[in-house]
Amino acid sequence: MNETEIEQAAELLAKASSVCVSSGAGMSAESGIETFRDENGLWSKFDAEELATPEAFERDPVKVWDWYRHRRRQLATIEPHAGHRLLAEWEERVDDFVVVTQNIDGLHHAAGSQNVIELHGRMDAVRCVSCDYQLQGLDDLGPEPRCPKCQDWLRPGVVWFREMLPPGAIEAAFAAAQRCDVLLLIGTSGVVQPAASLAEAAKSYGAAVIEVNPNQTALSSLADVHVAAGCRDALTALDKAWRRVGS
Image 1 (cartoon, rainbow, N blue to C red):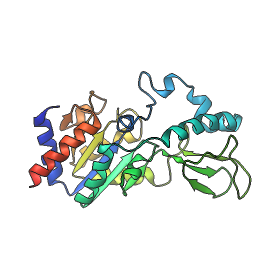
Image 2 (cartoon, rainbow, N blue to C red):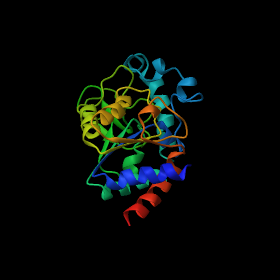
Image 3 (cartoon, one colour):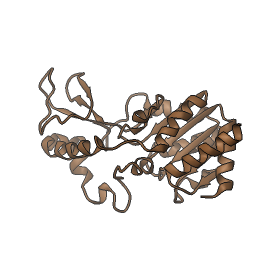
């Protein structure tokens, strides 16, 4: 981790009255959540067409639920790491602080962040396919979860391939990116749209872009500062430097 990059990033954050965070799979991976698109990610082992599309659920809801029940059980054992908790603290430090996440694990909320836009939904949420019934939590709902109101199927509250994002989510995300002074990219490869376009939108409106990622990504060319480190370590170092700059 380069100290100069940390100091530069801290100075940008210290001057910002509006910060937008865009977090991806790398953030969750450090809490033990499996990624999707890495070389050894979930989609290298499982067929997304069989598990994460509306058509798959229509064909075989039991099969889809078997996969999600396993992942929900895993999620119940996982905690936010120090980086998640620091973002929640920073929300108290900055007048306008928004976290936009592609992650479906709810760890930002679990860490205490309040202003979170979850573009791809939540794995700890379920909803009925026919009525307005919804449920939050990770209780095991059995192999064939049914709605207590209408008896139709319950489904995971995530966004599957070929589905629309939650109403208003992407609009709110781009509004946050366009008004921010600093866009903080954390653990995202920058290849999943439309989230990948947030950095370009922020940059076009004059924001500084800080990228936190041990690797170069598709968005690195837009970054004013690239902190080449893992999310937890980088955010911990940034917090210490920010406190020094602000003292």
